[in-house]
Every structure is written in C-alpha cells, then in structure tokens.
Amino acid sequence: MVTILEVNETNKMIEQEKLDVRTITLGISLLDCCDADLDALNRNIYDKITRLAKDLVSTGREIELEYGIPIVNKRISVTPIALVGGRACRSPEDFVEVAKTLDKAARDTGVNFLGGYSAIVSKGMTPTDEALIRSIPAALSSTERVCSSVNIGSTKTGINMDAVKLMGEIVRETAEATKENNSLGCTKLVVFCNAPDDNPFMAGAFHGVSEGDAVINVGVSGPGVIKNALEGVRGENFEVLCETVKRTAFKVTRAGQLVAQEASERLGIPFGIVDLSLAPTPSVGDSVAGILEEMGLESAGAPGTTAALALLNDQVKKGGIMASSFVGGLSGAFIPVSEDRGMIDAVNRGALTLEKLEAMTCVCSVGLDMIAIPGDTSASTISGIIADEAAIGMINHKTTAVRLIPVIGKDVGDTVEFGGLLGYAPVQQVNRFGCADFINRGGRIPAPIHSFKN
Image (cartoon, rainbow, N blue to C red; front, side, top):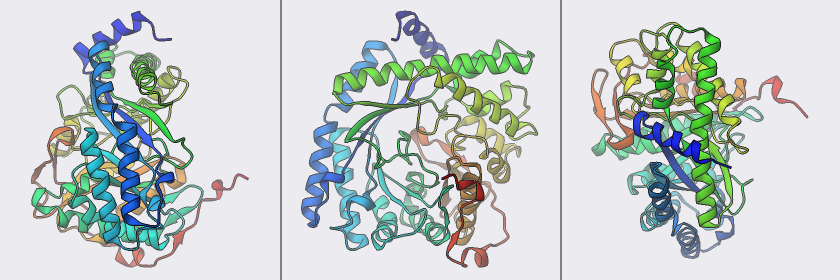
C-alpha cells in the first residue's frame, strides 16, 4: 500500500528534483493475430492494438492530474513481429506493410512510440527473421513511431556473428535511408545481447513470448532526485553514500509502483513490472553524469568513473527492489550520450571517449546508447562494436545493447540535433583500424563455459 506520506514526499521530488515516470508501456501479445493472408494479419494487428490501447493515453493523463506525477511517455510494446508475420510475410516488402500498420495503430491510439518490430536471432536466423531484418531501413524510414530491435546473442546461446555482420549493414542502410533527417532512423534501432522480455523503454521494448496477453509495465526516472540527495552527504564515506542512493532509489521506485497500480486497475490489465532505471534527459540537473560528478569525479570519464557507476547501479537495484514486488526490465542506470547533458559535456571536454563508454557498459544497465559517429563509418566497424558489446553481455550474464547513429555527412567535431528526449550529440571518434576479416568469418561465437547450468 502506498501511503499519503509517500505521495507528499513524491510531490516534493517532482517539484524540486525533476522526478518523473518516464513511461507507461502497454505490452500486447499479437500471437493470436497470425494469419496466412497479409491483409488479414494487418487487420488483426490493428484491431487488437487499438482495442486494448484505446484508453491508455487518457488514463495516463488522468493519473498525472490526480497525483501530480508527470508521465512523460505512453507507449506500446508488441510480440516480436518476426514471430507474428511468419505465415503472411514472404518478403521484406511485406514486413514494411506490417510496420505501417503498427505506425497507424500507434498514431490512432496517441502513443509516443510502439516497440516490437523485432527479431530474436541469438542462435540462428530463419528466412522470416532475415526478411524482417532486411526490411528495417525501409520500415523505419517510412514510419514515425515504430521502434525496432534485434537480439543477436545471449549467455545461453553465444553470439550469432552472421546476424552481427548483417546488423552492421542494416545500421548503415538505416542511416542512409533517413539521412535527410540526421539519420534519425538509427535512434529507433537497437541491437541487443540478453534482451529482457519485459523492457518498457524504447527503442528496445518488445512483449516477450513468456508474457501474458496484455500487461502494464512502468519505467521510472529520477537522476535529479539521486543527485539532490547526494549533495547533502558530500565528503561522507562510501557507506553513507551507498545508503543515501539506496534510500532514494526506494522512494523513486515507489512513485512508479503507484502509477503502475493505478494504471493497471483503471485499464483492467494486469500489472507487470517496474523498471527502476535512471533514465536521464537533456535538461540541466537530470543527468547520470551529474550523479557521478557529485560523487567526487571532476568529470564523467575520469579515472574512477566505472567504479562510481558500478556503485550507483548496484545501490539503485538494492533500493528499488525493496519498493516493488515486481522489478524487471533493465533496472539500473542508463548512459545515453545524446540524452544526458553531463555526458555530452564530458565528451566535448575530451574526458569521455567511446572506449571509456564501452568500459562503463560492463556495469551499467544496458550499453552504448545514442552515440553519434561519423557518417562514413564502415558496416564492418559497426559490426565490430556490436560484437564487443555482445561479448560483454554474454560473458557477464547481463543485458548489453548498441544504439549507434552513423550520421551521414557528419564527422568528428560536428554536433547533431535529434530533438525532444533524444537530445543532441557530438559526433565521436571511432577507432580507425579495421575488423572486416574478423566479422566476415561467419558462424557463431559459442556460449561461455559458465552458461551450462543444467
């Protein structure tokens, strides 16, 4: 039970410390929409999404007004479309028609984004999986609200290097297909290892096959709240620092729990999970980098950054998991460059490089996120970066991901504006040495020895 005292405390965090609920995401299973006829499939998909999500946006607004908790986004995630379209979609062009149906459903229900234009190919690709993947550039360039993800590896199966090679090419093609808009399509495309089934955050959200017919997942935010709390314990030892983060994360997660319970009850849809990830924004004071600097670093990226981020991620999880019976998704700290003013500043001052960001992904919630790179970066180099991140996730039994934006026509030193919560980003240097011969070997990197637990 959430008490009125907690509500009042939450209101203080909202008014003074930029607390918000980043998203209510309605997960919808589309498995019962499968049909061998493409028109029937599209009709089934549109009808089910619009029926279940018709009140999602209005319900979110009601909760915002009643409790005074800002809910930034209302979103939908669906079953990976490669699983849904297998009988009807015989070509990439067929999948693009499904993407347009998803976009229309998202627009007509009023949600910000719809995730699940996805394929799970961690061990191998079916012809259907490959058709969907090859359709991604056209799908993302012809839709506004559809987000896409591909899971290319896991601790249990290893890394599908054929898929890694293909995804490097697809990222490049998506950048080219949306080059008139700063290669914006790549901001809606993420490549995963160990993707969770219940992630409410875009662009990687999809409704896993282990989920029910429909479920409400909530993603909270709150870097500003954590930073504000740490300002009161400057100079204290690590025990005090950790306890402060943990207690504050508990309060932030309780706000998400309240919103999740209310949305679930009002929509008549079961509550799934609260994802307690610290999701920054480009606004001043709402930065994960700002938390790290409040801990005592001169700049994010300085020696000690990975240790500070590991501490933050662990204490956020420890505090949040006590605040909700159902914590899931990614849960921890995000480090997207374009969406975090402090990270942008650290890159601009030369303190934060792509290699340091890769080291930080060993201990953060996800991976290399919203990073602009030169537009002439080769597909094989992008694949190499994806492979590196997948290896970190596979070996460490954690989710890792890559959302790179090779901005066509831009080079190191340029700045790219994406708009809204996507923010802006300096174009970062990429290692100039090649890896094409490694990527072109093909096949699969085997699962690590510690994956065998049966």
